[in-house]
Image 1: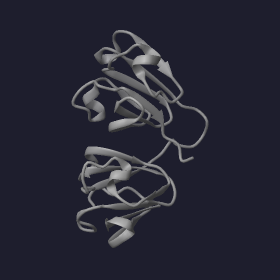
Image 2: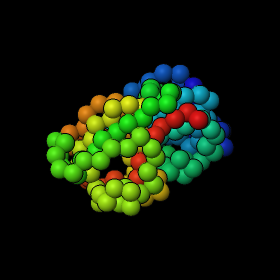
Image 3: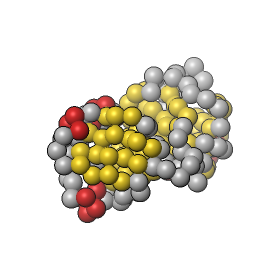
Image 4: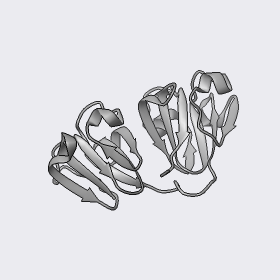
Length: 173
């Protein structure tokens, strides 16, 4: 369950969800604080699960800056599956269409450059679990949600460039 509030510190109009919502605009006009009671969620700044993504795990977020929000616009959200269990695995490639140098990981990685000597990656396959990719090292910057499946090009996960500097497993704990 997730609860979205229009104002900071859990004030103002709010909306509670227990499942996906492709368009929040009729429920709230902005989002400045969030309470995630259970599960993991991905929030989008545009309707129909598009735009900038924010991955939320259980906790209380009194201000949109606490979840690295660029602004107070949240227009859709999805419940993330595949966050339970003990198996995470992702393969990534420095070329599109699964070409070029390949690396594999089942662990969090604060620096792709240091761990794998990749300055970027263009495609990947999520074999198990759900993952968050970040444009900057140490889990900073714009984030992207990936679930089980194939991503032949970085645009498939919503990025405008192949810059991925860190990644981590999405877990509820």
